[in-house]
Image (tube, rainbow, N blue to C red):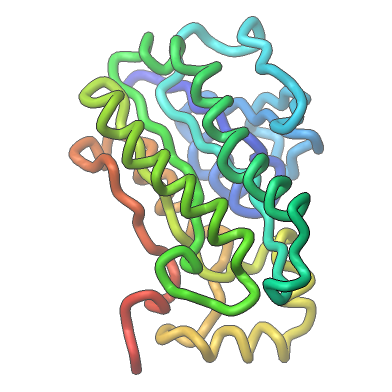
Length: 230
């Protein structure tokens, strides 16, 4: 099996680091992020998704898979959100994802077949208090997922993963103690919060040929929260 090239935007820790570990066992992985990755099996390229264009000279001519991982968890009552709050969440979660995909479209099309994976949130489908800003931004990302899946088929597959709360640095304020993890876990039918590897394994599946007949989907990896009542 030929070695493939995967690009992870923001893959230096949490879900991205776990995904890089999974993919780099048999493939070339390029991590574009502001911080140095927590793993050593990938090539790191300094990059800020909000402010920098991608330097294509540092990447291979053909890219087999792209995952856009940057995100926000900004939770507070609706009346306390400012216009800047909404704009900042939208820029990082949705607009920068669209820009990155546009900049990498040529190497994605150069590969025989390629795949894009984006990251939404369970809060888009499952209404939750205090999630107005992130749900709006990720809702736009889900729209982008389906639109691009239609436009880029059959050459490029596009899917998204919608996790529930996952024990990563991004969620450290929400899961800052074992008691908080337990309380949050109890809200889920599977009675625990997600781990980075839970989400990374799903993303790796969607990026590789194992999922070659899946496109335009938003797959919930959320401990059953969005679909079950137990």
